[in-house]
Image 1 (cartoon, rainbow, N blue to C red):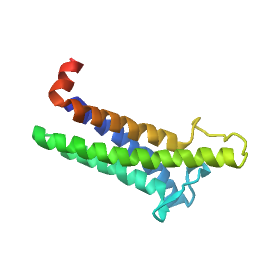
Image 2 (image 1 turned 90 degrees about the vertical axis):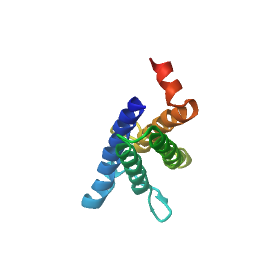
Image 3 (image 1 turned 60 degrees about the horizontal axis):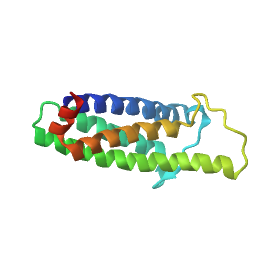
Amino acid sequence: MNSYLKTTLLISWGGVLFTGIICGTKLFVGDWLLAEPSPYFLWFPSWWFCFGLFVAVFLSTALSHGKSEKQKMLTVSLNTVIAFLGSLLAGRLVAEVILAQFGQDLPPADYVIMFPWSLYVLTLFTTIFVFSATLMLLGPKRMEKSAG
């Protein structure tokens, strides 16, 4: 269980920093980082929701340190739901980028870090989801037994 908490805390902190830089650039500079667009979701830019979901996973994981096993499993369940919602949102962002590129016969995008930002966010959310769902399905005792 402790390895789950540490790993999820690290991944979610990476997501907070990654989406925080993107959102902070929009907030302070006035344009999205590297001019990559942000589709809207419920009347707000999708990146704000991604940032909020990563903050929620980070806080729920950080606050569960030192708690009972039952409370930690509640955190795992909460993280599974949040990461699933984040994967859906980030998957939607990836799909919109791909459809926009193929639908308008645009030349291949010149991404600075090889892929659109949303693909990295999708990878982080999916990793948290798979890790959380596996722990939820196997339980902490079977997870520790199979790991060691």
